[in-house]
Length: 355
Image 1 (cartoon, rainbow, N blue to C red):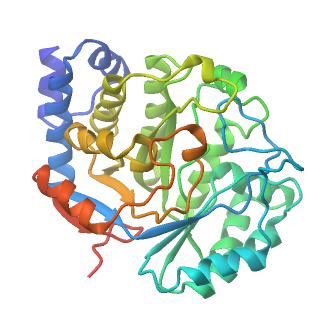
Image 2: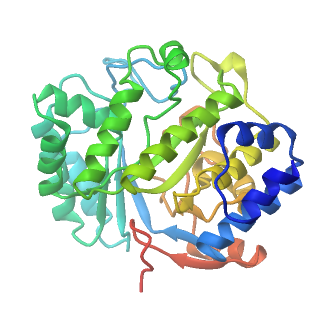
């Protein structure tokens, strides 16, 4: 193990085999030390956050992933599909909130087309011109663009012209094709997700990346996922941040699996920071982890915790997350930073400090 530790200390890249050994054999405190070393090398003592809100246009989805607690079938009393006017009003209601980012994701509604989403982006951008519009998972984007008969580059260009400036990282789930076919058999493929992000990077649209971990996947499959992201980042440099998303078990078809331990969360975070040496930011998404675990994550490589949210997302609350009405104040963020010797930095979507 000392050879692997030495490579990391010297800033050298580790292999997938070394990553697996590190994940399985390194003491947790050693992973914390090494991940912190890598984080300080890249981000110093910064703790990044932003002022943001989410819009979730619909939870009706043509896909039926086994891990999803958010989807509802058309006609369900718990289903929603906001009109463009309703979405515009949500954005207008946040116009004076000080938010610098609006995050738009939802289900893949079978009836909506690219023109619908272009109009949505245009209206939201008009309502909050000072906020960056970060919109749609690669799965949503691939569906709407392919439905329009366009290449990914063509479709993304049209969305960018309407006001979409960045893309979140959702929909990646797990890249192992065999396992993906079990947990989300009718969903967009690994190849589609990677190709969509590569196309976005090629025309200058920055994106994030994720993994859904803690369900049926092995640690080796987790590392394979990270490796495919690292390889794409080597080619494009277009990922801003990586967000490990923990499988939460409430209200979905895999709930009998339960959830992995806190130690597994921290090991996954630390390894992400160590292995993804070319993605600058590792986000501990506080809505998914809960505030207490998020604070612990700061000692395992995380430099970002996402934003204020302002009770605007239901995706993880519907899956049993601790914060059922997620909201984080600036005072809470500053106190968290102070307790952990970190400097809170309000950022925009592109990690530029907000003056």
